Image (cartoon, rainbow, N blue to C red; front, top):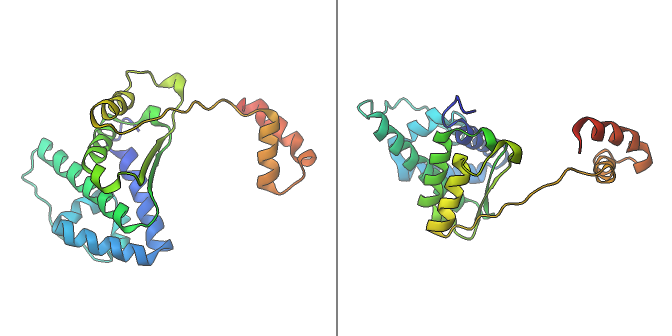
Length: 203
């Protein structure tokens, strides 16, 4: 992920667009209308970053972006567009907006910067109804990792509350209970499989 700038964020929202376009056309139409009204032709930049957004918008985008942007200007514009995108989707859903990133120990610096901008610019949109969850392997992510530094910054400077939850490995019993529930089988039947999985994964 670190070798693919913005991949962590764009892939997350691209999956959201794919799911929304299939599972909730009513909300997808609200999102499409709001994005077109707010961003106009600039939507093409988001479609380039998130191809599945085109399925929500339902249009063919032939607009040519601003090729005169410097690298810095292009980055600022993309940060702004993503922040507006998050604001739009959070206002179009009745449920709280929940963002989840897995394996954050590999997140690239560009995605950290974009996530920081989203949290700053959309505070008024998602305050009280938005949540960001990130998971990482604590033995691979130090306190000086860019994401840890960013989260400390927004906590101290912006008052955005962050909470760390340390998850310990599952016990054999807990793993067997999960397997039993998932497979709809009696615990005594799933116990041998649970033992094998626990041995391989250490819980």
